[in-house]
Amino acid sequence: MATRHWVIDPAHSDIQFKVRNLLIASVNGHFRIFSGRMVTPVHDDFSDAYITLTIDVYSIDTNNRDRDEHLKSPDFFNADAFPEITFLSTEFKKIEGDKHTLTGELTLKGITKTVTLDVLFGGEAKDGFGIQRAGFEISGLINRKDFGIHADSVTPDGILVLGEDIKLQAGIQFINETE
Image 1 (cartoon, rainbow, N blue to C red):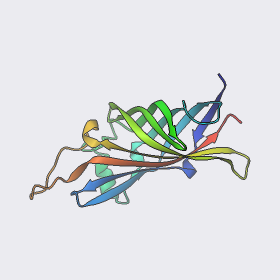
Image 2 (tube, rainbow, N blue to C red):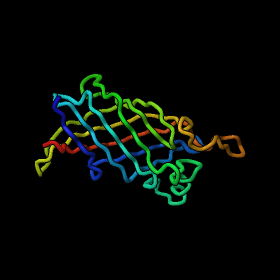
Image 3 (cartoon, one colour):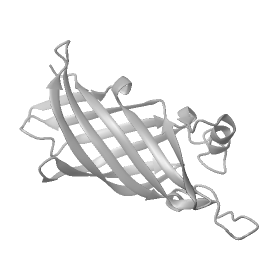
């Protein structure tokens, strides 16, 4: 079967996360360095696409250097032992219209879990240089405890320091390498 090969354009993509702090407000962060590929059958949509993603944990950025260094520590991501987060898709399924689901194996801190994310296909277009691009908005929720991220610390008043749910949001633009 003929396939198309795509690569993430990091200049036009973004990977973000959000987690509740003291359960009263959210802390937002980004990963600045990542790469990925997508292989698709040649047909009218992206169903059956296979996607891989690698994120550099050291590139974490929450707009606070001290917090970023703490997040790289064994309390959270343990970047020295696990410098990458990886995602390998097992299913990309069209739901209706531009809505899809993306299921795959997320590996974080050496722990692999199956996750399903929501995907909104933004469309395909050629840029001013004639390069074919495809855009996707990806969102989902993971539980930090599933990946051994930070113990259940509480304040002296008994308030959980960090919420369990981590919201993921990514705007990803792929470049077609086949053409």
